[in-house]
Image (cartoon, rainbow, N blue to C red; front, top):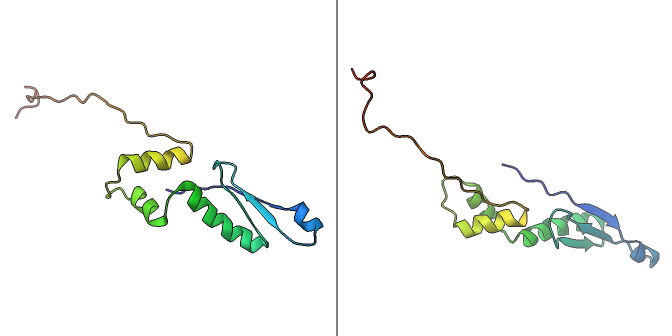
Length: 107
């Protein structure tokens, strides 16, 4: 499973007018995820940190959530989904079970 979080990096024109380079980073899909840097490279590094903080998840927590063998607490799964605009849906379906083997299938 792979998640992508697009972001934009824009040169800060106010800083440029004062003779300094600066860049602003925003993640349109993650509310409140904004940062910046004094160079393009720094802005990209800050964006990685910003996304992790905004999602409230550490890498090892994400790996546990994605591991089908790990029993993640439901609250952690719900919180992670909420941050990316998703929700958990649990569905109940009737399962037909036969207590006897039909005579036509008996040996």
